[in-house]
Amino acid sequence: MNAIERQKIILQIIAEQGAVTVAELCERFGVSDMTIRRDLSTLERASLLRRIHGGAVSARGRSYEPPVLTRVHEAPEAKRAIGRLAATLVHEGDSIALDIGTTTLELARNLTRLQDITVLTNSLPIANLLTDQPGIRLMLCGGIVRPGERSLIGPVAEYTFSQFYVDKAFIGIGGVDLEAGLTEYNTDDAEVKRHMIRNAQRCILLSDSRKFGLKTFASVAPLSVVDDIVTDDGLSPAFREALEREGITVHIASVSRANT
Image (cartoon, rainbow, N blue to C red; front, side, top):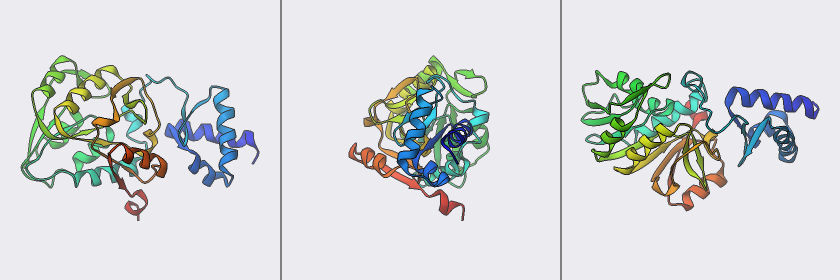
């Protein structure tokens, strides 16, 4: 396979997944990382993708937010594995804030076995899922509904989160960058997340490995606010070491084991 054919396939993969790592491409094409890095540099110069630490993402603007109906089909195995592992961090008697997102929704699916927990959320899908669970006291923050996303935003949502002090906040995110910290596509969602994080005793970030090294439009918070990160085994060892140097506990969900 020549470079042009390989680069076409790389663009197809990014169009489908949103991001790709150098390691994935090396394994797929059976070539060296130097060859892949040259391919990515060529495509970046043509404004067809944007390189990030360990891989590349779509060249679409940082404020472009993939629709939720698209995101729900991205990395589903990783999100399910992350949700199962994150649920082990919730204990009976806990009060938790659950952010919007397809990964936090997977966490919510694993909470139904618990008793005596309080869940405060700005996610209508999570609220629908947990409404009839007898062991869960469910609180919905109120606010303005974002069409399509089905999240609650605005002053009412922000005020609600500022009035409650939860044990743990489980946060979804658009991107995680070592310098920029946590970033999000939408400024309204970013503001709600800041209020959610501020009043939590422990901040736990849920993110599949594709989002590490990605910097999106709106700043949410520095990495220093994060106590734990739950991600999948696609996270590079170098990025994990950098996070742990920041004092963050990194929990790795094994996707390959979950599929066996």
